[in-house]
Structures are given as structure tokens and as C-alpha cells.
Image 1 (cartoon, rainbow, N blue to C red):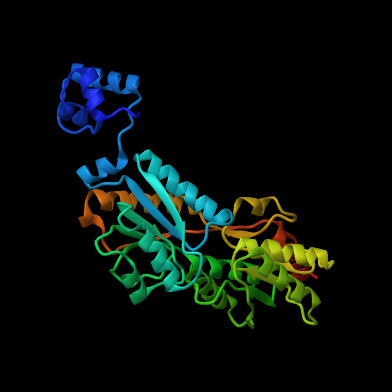
Image 2 (tube, rainbow, N blue to C red):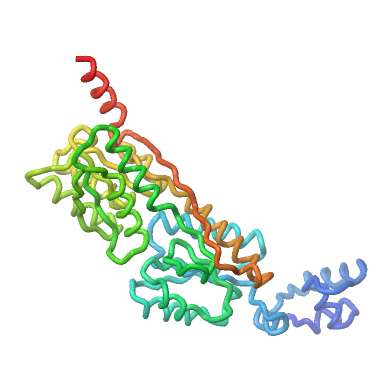
Length: 341
């Protein structure tokens, strides 16, 4: 049978209260008592009972992370950032996915975490406003990530999706591309809507051409097939994420369309594989792991002091990363040469 706290107290020749204070770092114990308790616990291989400790201090020392999905490099990087920050604070991480885009799916996932976590990190691009307020457990410290936020309701970190998409579209336009198409993300998705809005803002007087996608490689591949087979091709394509851009790249290459010579290509996120495809992908860099780390730090502060759980919203800056897929250098050489002829 597993050793109990009574066994540790008996072996260390101290009271149960002294064992509890030592193991929970609560109250004062003499160095001698502390040494005897820790030695006895080690010898007996004593493991504190998490549920019992939670009843005493009303803490689970666990934080929840609710995501719309857990598949792909984007979510892997986000989880990595959150997990590292949590471990540095002695917190455990409970990860769940809503596995869908409906408020009902999100509500079900939230209910599964209720009572099991001290605080919640949540990314739900499909839920916002009143439906979000109704779904969140009352009184639970919560920090939102890239989720539509009603002003002053919850602390949040948002990626500058609009600014990044506008900067990328302006960059493609500055390279001389006139017909810039956009592969959008899923409809009613906050990130996708912001990136679409940034694309339109960066077009200027150019005509928009928007192709449906869902953030998956498969949807990018289908979009690439349609573009390659079309009678009027764009001279540049900006996909709302790298996964769709890479799927599009594969379809264009398969159809004999050269990137960037025939069609320039760009994505968004800068997932690790983006630099290793051929040609390397021009994209908008989002430090997703940093967003996860900052959100966890904000949540840990709110758990320790609920008064810090204010409705302030932080914005994570993005960075334009120019690689070969957009043909920027060759296009600029052509444009400079044409000015002198």
C-alpha cells in the first residue's frame, strides 16, 4: 500500500501538522524537522494526494487550455509556450479542444474543465460577445487568446492579424503585382476575418479576388488547383495561413506553374516548416509561443490576485518575413531596369 501522511509523521517522529506544513511550504518549521520529514517522505516514497490537497487549499495547481483544435504546428507552438511557462510556476496543464466551431461544442468543453482548474486560457475564434460571457464559468480567472472580445469583459492577447495582412498585401503590391488573390480562412472565424479585412485594406485600388479556404493544407491545395486551371490567373496569392499557402504551393508545382516566376505566393504565421519548403515561403511571423507564455503569465497573476483579472487587451506584434516565394528581389530588379529603358 502507498505510504500515508501518518506514516511519514510516525517515521519522522513529528506531528501530522508538521509534515503538512513542511510539504506545503506553509507555516514555519525548524530546519531539523524539515530535514527529518523530507528524508522520511523520500524513504517511504510518499506522494501527496492531489485531491486532498485541493480540498485544503482550494487550489488544483492546474490551468486549463481550451483550443479550437490541437492539430498542426500553430497549435503545437502555442501549447509549447503555455506549457513551459506553466512548468516554471509549478502548474500543470490540462489541454482540451472544442472539436468544432459551434458555441455548444465550446460550452461542453468548458463544462468538462469546471472545478478541475484554477484558471483558464481560451482560444475560440468562433465564439464572442454575449455567447462567450454565457459560456465562461463565473468567477474563474480567464485570459483569452485571439478571440473576439467584448470591451472590458476579459483580459486578452490578440495577434495583429489585420496589420500583418495589410502589410503583406502592401508588400506584394510594392513588388509590382496587380492581381493579388487571397485564400481566406473559415467564415465566422475571428482570425480569418481580421486577415481578410487587412488584405482588402492593403489592396488600394486593386480588385479583390477571394477564394474560400478553411486553414487546412487540403483547402489550400484545392485553391491552388482552381487557380492553376483558371483562364485568368492572379500574379500573386496571399493565403491566410502557412498551411494553406503550402498546400497551394504543392498544387501549383504539380500543375507546372512556377513559384514565384508565374505566381508569387505568401502565407501567414511563419510555422517552422515555412522556411524549408521550395521555394522558402514569404510570410507574416507570429511568435505563437510568446503569446502562450504571456497569456499564462497573465493568468497566473490573476489566480494569485483576482483583482488583476481586468479587461485589458494586449496586442502581439507581427513581422513581415520576405523569402523567395514572393519573388521580391527579381521583381524589384525588373522594375528598376524598366525605369531606365
